Length: 507
Picture 1 (cartoon, helix red, strand yellow):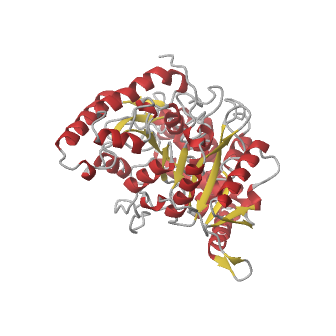
Picture 2 (picture 1 turned 90 degrees about the vertical axis):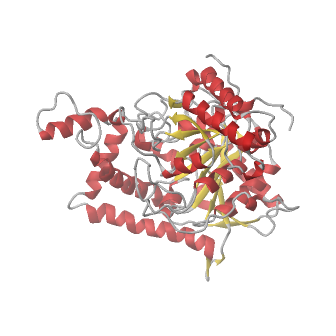
Picture 3 (picture 1 turned 60 degrees about the vertical axis):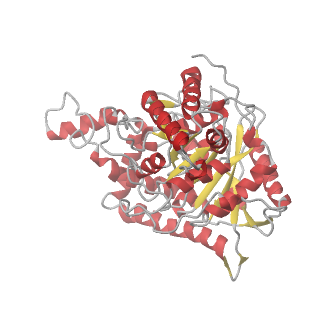
């Protein structure tokens, strides 16, 4: 493979070929990525913590394994590949702040299952990426430490809450990264930063070792430069975990094998286009780019069908009852006793609780705790929380009927195609004082979490400001192979995923 691009700009599968052919070493690859971080991260601010010494040690160990292997093809798939981890995922020996002051000094004594699986696959871990506090946000502006900047325009947000991971991938500060997706927090920043973001089916990937936001919604997913890399990462981290009671004991398919192309790669694939996802108020360039992408799917053999997901309008209010309710319960542990630094002026038990939490949590986290506590309180539980759960069932039924079909609606579809977000990346500070406008950035992604299905965002165009636009493909539960194959076919027929932001290193 000729070296036509910088090492930090390679995909995982490109770098793996070079490593196995001994054209580059894992240490050289890791050093190139670290130098890129030192050159541009003062402007991007993707990382909360780096561990360069440990990363170089892991890279040296990978080089020894490569040198000693009689058959390089038998080596772990991610051997020597530098990756980044969102800072709500525990890595032993690295701080796990979840973007919050209340966990500023927390060093986890164990690490997440997904991290253990990356290590077993030979990955080199670079550090922890920035996140909205406790993954609550759509812009990474809610981080208690600093705002991450979009590599395509430093004056704009990278999306959230996995904005640090998405920005790091887009800027060449890692070859890929892990994020978490509770209401769109992998797919929306992937759209804003022009990379691929995959939200697996709930239960497909272990949540053990993840700082919980909303336990019935949270799911770990990869952010990568192309669909093949996303498939490789999913194959690595997916699978049953007895330490996670929500993990599903099902075989993990070979997602890479599902990407094979034919002359008409999507021949016979039924693609549903939901009328509720093309709404008034969308940025016109987003609608135009996504409709052009759907036309491209048709050229590849897809059968395009208009469908209806009739309860979509209720998804946003349902999400912002259920997710804050679960957050209220999950964040009760951060009280200055079990977790978190105790406020120095607290004298009584109640002062410990109130002062510690008042100083440790940021405004958005406090807002959601109060919303959730109210929804769960006596006298309001049935009216708000219970009713939201019932509507959640209707939202899931919409997707089930769309995929399976019904006597009145005819045959179902295989995938659903729609925008990832109604706009491209907005300016930093533009929506900070308007929570509803901020929440609307996830209007097309959060239904998927409520239903527990899988979805992927991939680049499908740019607006007039040169900002990326994302196409979202949604599949049924455990339908990752189908959406990956469709995404890969589209990607191979276009060049949107090959474009990179222009960053001037400042050191």
